[in-house]
Picture 1 (cartoon, rainbow, N blue to C red):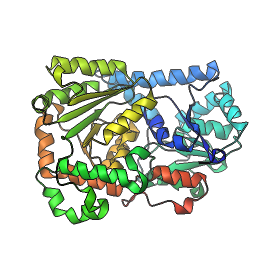
Picture 2 (picture 1 turned 135 degrees about the horizontal axis):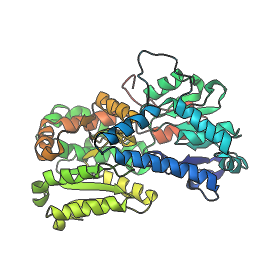
Picture 3 (picture 1 turned 90 degrees about the vertical axis):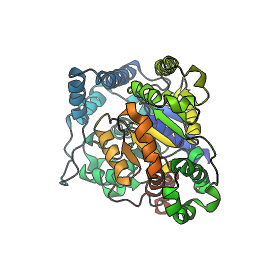
Picture 4 (picture 1 turned 45 degrees about the vertical axis):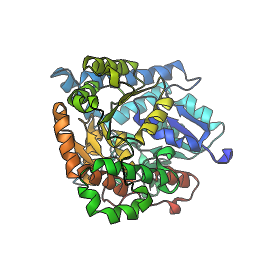
Length: 445
């Protein structure tokens, strides 16, 4: 792509969600680089301090939630400040919330974000941000270029929209129809809303979906050992994937991936899963991938837990841990591992959108209002299921496999969610929105 046509892609280094969304967009970015609002070179100390306090508070609350009574109460209060109202009855929700007022107070009184916007304004380009605060900053400080904000969940709070949305120039990339509808209730003009889908990695989708179709075909073989779903719907499967992508034999062992969130919460769940599946792992009839992300303490926790379970010999064979010191390399490893993953077990975070890759998702407990909506979205699509008791994974997991449900869920995710988010966003910033494709066949989500 011509460098003059490239954009500033702006994220925030808090958790994984906003940077995971930005990772595929790097091909649209100047020098293929992501700008992190809270850690870019030259950031004023005052700005860095505000971001750091915000991140530490979020991570503390996420971990503290596990403390009986007090943890739940603290998280409930925190969640209330950023909660998403019920969608029905449809009402005008354009009034600013306490959270939004506080953000604007920081921007106005402490000139939060002014330095970054002034630097980017020296050579204006389209600005794409995967977090709402940089968009609010750009709007407030009159950034001269176009401002695009990508929502990273299937529903969003009022904080994503400026105090006076009718006077704002922010345009929104909506990953779902529900987000588009929600933005209207918050007062955003319809002409500033583009339903694009969530950007997924090129290395997992491929041109004309060639990669995702190949991977899904191999996955279906593992997800339906008794051929209950694939026998009944073989013609439909071949129609959508191509007969050549439907293998006649197993290409890899059944592989389960468990991913913790950005704060490192729910790590204990990973070891409970491994413990329940210890027999299958010792017999080499199953692969498991534990995703520690960039948290070395989580990686050590996984290794220690595996050793205590007498599975040291299985490490780096059929038990693998994904860990990297930086998020770029972590995403790269994660995306590569997804190609050989059959089932993804995670909380319903931004990874919910990865069901479009033909991944059935086992959902652990949601953290926060937005994840409750993601959970509902996955269940509506038919590609996500709430986890049963992890201590009996060795029982219910294989019951679901034998029923053919996982295979059906994989196809539902592929057919009903979108793999075209990156392509659609590229078309919008180059003013070709009429060429964007439909993102889903499921309404109103």
